[in-house]
Length: 95
Image 1: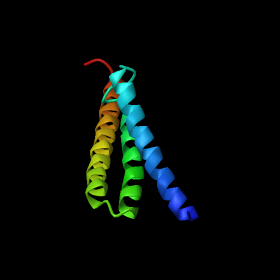
Image 2: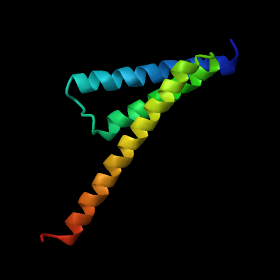
Image 3: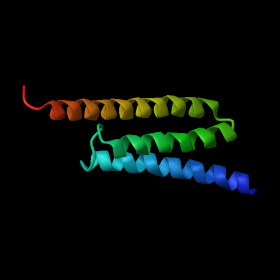
Image 4: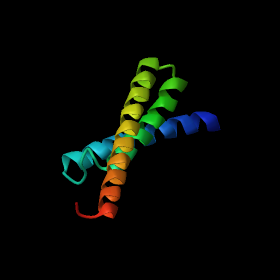
């Protein structure tokens, strides 16, 4: 196995591990769907699956994970926007 092939397999297994860990933490009630940690696990995990799926020619899997990663990125954007709004409201003080 070449170093590139090893890196691709590591990316795939790391991606699988992150997505499963996120699911475990959600199921155990340790994280919520609005948790940045959970969403980052999904984004990074999907990225690993994209690399692995593309390398192996598993285009349906790679495509699914592109969408999965975009959903996670959108969730992170919404979480950040919500925090900015809350911070701005706190700076203005009581109405």
